[in-house]
Amino acid sequence: MIRIYPLIFILLWSSAFITTKPIVDNSDPFAALAFRFFFVALGFYSFSIYSKQSIIVNNRNLIESLLSGVLFHGLYLGGVFYSISIGMPTGIAALIVTLQPILTNALSGPILNEKVTTKQWIGVLLGFLGAALVLGLDVGTDIPLLGLIATIVALISITTSTIWQKKLSNNLPLPVSNFYQAIGGCLFHILIVIIFTKPYIHFTKTFVIAMSHQIFLVSFGAFTILMFLIKKNSASKTVSIFFLIPATSAFMAWLFLNESLTHLDFFGFLIATIGVYIATRD
Image (cartoon, rainbow, N blue to C red; front, side, top):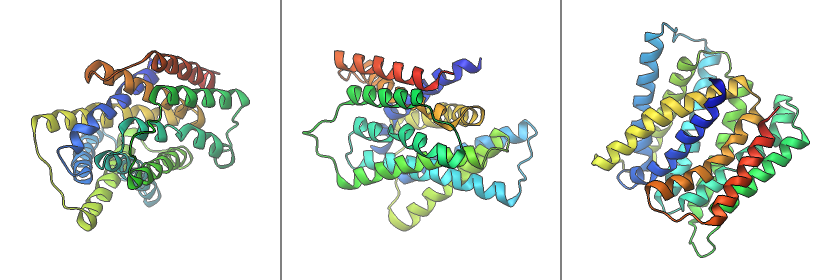
């Protein structure tokens, strides 16, 4: 059963890029994320109580989980949502954050004392090449500077969060850890809303459907699987599957949003798949 988790994760995580645009078209991105993680925290709290997991943790675990939530749910998702809301093309944003495995591989050796082999590096580079072929870089597209900066911040944040989660926040039950991480993300976005933005949410049918998808399938489903994979595997091997996400997102956009998908895209998906296989197999 565990072997199928990466596939489920890829499908769920990729679908988040499809529903992000409808959300930011109907709300302030930070207000939407605060709304999302309030209900995510409530859900994980309820599940922790139902499964009789104690939510009373020591100060160290509390701080570690909250900080992980700020990095992952706050800075990473906030950066992605904000960049798309101000006109950053979704594909280019996805490609930038897909650099995560390269940074994680570079840092997991000295920080986590993980052995990153030449085979893994070859797989990572092939994965990035395949993702780049799928997404392309539209030279004629105007890329907002703030959007580019926000996406780079998101890249650094998700890389840091992955390593942090593997090194420190690795000794709590998943529902409890996810509960406190969701609180950290929610509080971060509330603070951003109070200080920097004028919050608004239009509860249109499109927004409700897209937000429900991201709460239940992405936050409850994909994120829990990711935390499980990080806990059970090396950080460098786990994040290599992220290279399949841009290609899968492009395929979903073609399937559900009627966006074009070329032969080059299919070729890039194949290259990325081979890269992920090489980087993650024993």
